[in-house]
Image (cartoon, rainbow, N blue to C red; front, side, top):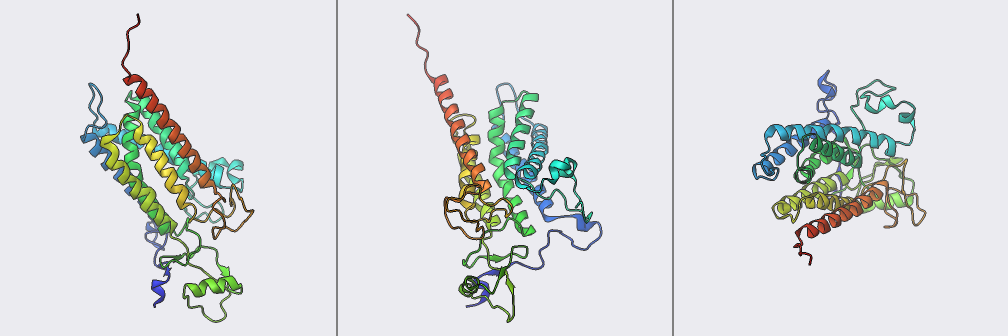
Length: 334
């Protein structure tokens, strides 16, 4: 059996830059391009929902200008929230607290090389985007729950591109695996080949190890692609098929929050937590991050997803009982 069927070597021709080593064009990055694809996809889906009448209210018909303005406002707040949350929650160096202007500084402070806004948090983007869309609906006096229901249908489709961008960057990779679709990511932490368990693991993957090799990259779950497939495409298909059958406004918003949180919580078991954060809850006391030693060891992402699930369930319950009360027939008093 060939090595290709037992693990996949991350393609050496993939770089974060679309045109590496090319002046000016070298500033263009796959991750940024994926953001553009994501926003265009969200616009097209939202416009289709608009054409279906999902955004209309009594005496009002939504326009393409409304959609563009709505998405633009959401994007601005999403990027702010994603970046600020990332620097406050996921960065442990404290440099952004000492120099907050670096949060939106797109150059490496040491090498002066252009890096873009490296480090974005989904959960921060979720909060920021929610605030932006709420403000837009308030400013433009639009039916808030209708509009947010519409945008949450579009979000996971666009999110798919974001995780593909992470894969092209070779970041946010998963834990080690013997599955035949495991990738040897170039920026992942290598392991000492002098360790017996590393030799056994490499043998299970039928890896060809050059004589005298001291460090080896072991195959890892392509967790970015898992997220693109399940948190992105699968959640999108769920919401897309439910959108015309929602029982009340706000239902899709709650369903998105619950479904994304649940799927992301599961995939976090395959994704390696940030080394400087480790587990927020470690039931067995293990500090091993490259493999799952207990289902009760929870990462930062899983804690935040748990909050999303509980928040989504509470929001759905509130809306359900509120709408049930409105629908109840009024009985005349004697």
